[in-house]
Image (cartoon, rainbow, N blue to C red; front, side, top):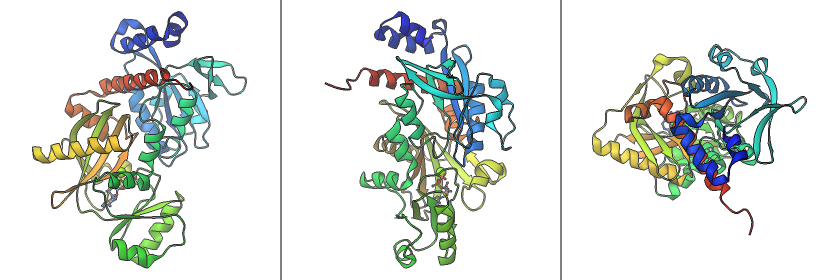
Length: 387
Ligand SMILES: Nc1ncnc2c1ncn2[C@@H]1O[C@H](COP(=O)(O)OP(=O)(O)O)[C@@H](O)[C@H]1O
Ligand SMILES: [Mg+2]
């Protein structure tokens, strides 16, 4: 629909046409490609999120196609969504079995998927929804590729994605802006001074790969020998490791939405039954953590948490969406733990659940995200690239 309009009309007409076509059902369908899988340790989580997104996209507004990225980074095109919906969760899935190897190309103003073998066309796309968590998906790399290919995409752009992925840069920016974060230190090699870390942070500490997610490679250390093991483990996932002082308090999350006008949701709470919110408690042992939506907070605290989340989103150059995770310390102070620019997107995930209690349904949320993607793309297209 989008490119048919382009062929027939002026860019102004096109811009109006897109926004109407989301809100206005008789304008035709938007061709959306859901990008999922990927090379990160969160491959399976991404498949689950994508399954839910595909199921909830309003098929009267969207023509949905899928791009599955396998663990080697190869893209596969599959227009039959049912195949994805039927994939068993958490089983090792080989995405190469369910489609044609594809490339995204940009030619004469059109963004198209072509078959790798012979470059024959597979589909034209109007917008991409990257449902990819972690490195090579949430970190600005895929966003850079989509930007070069000239295709609108959901979520943060290159800069916001890269900042949001890097816990060290993220925390430096927040700290410099006066937003409280846990005390931390950063290592760039396996050669480090244990005494210096301990005298700066004490115990217990959390050790994390700087660029990762879903608690992959994250450990809590209470003494020097645990610290060494934890640092070794974190360096398996990244060349940079961050060590943080433990924050005692409640774990809160806020969903944020918008480009320039930024909306925040009610606040939710994560209650890990024991230990911290690990990979297992996030995805494998649903009993080991519970989500309280909305969190039981007095209204002054909730408003304070929401405004810090909104501020963090702006400082970290986010657009489209992000989930801001915070701690409410025992003494009532709030600090930001991290921002997730492509939060978990299953129907039971915090990001969409928080919008639901704030008054935006899952499928309405998807419409809003696509509109924001198209809006940004139109604004960028209107900019001069040279004098
Ligand atoms: N400084 C900290 N103090 C207390 N708990 C922490 C701290 N950092 C991390 N955690 C615990 O570890 C979990 C995972 O850490 P997080 O920084 O959110 O990494 P990820 O990006 O992998 O989700 C958090 O949800 C929290 O339960
Ligand atoms: Mg987290």
